[in-house]
Image (tube, rainbow, N blue to C red; front, side, top):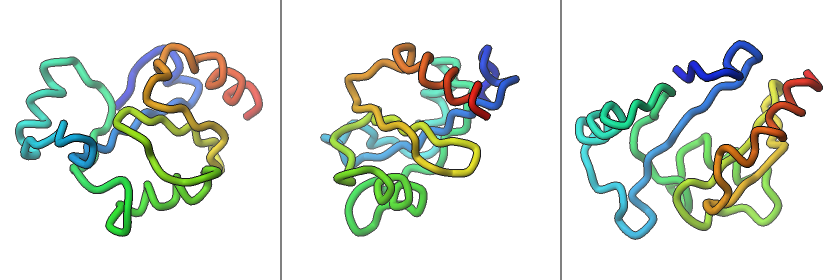
Length: 111
């Protein structure tokens, strides 16, 4: 579970590993768990699954169905979802997590 400074205000981070982007996530569930442990990941990492196409997991079908244009261009795409489950922000892979802190803080303040 994410335990960073915004956790107390309601921020939760969830990751979905996928091997659909240049084969960058070929590992088994155990290998993924070991990798995240080595890097101090402290948020839920879901089972590896498809995140695009007809076999995309339910969460990504929902997230991309609520984003103009749908689809995910590459790994590390980020979605900002409010407490009601509405997608209120979409950030491409090049956007660093630290650069969206302001958007997250604004969303928390609106809650």
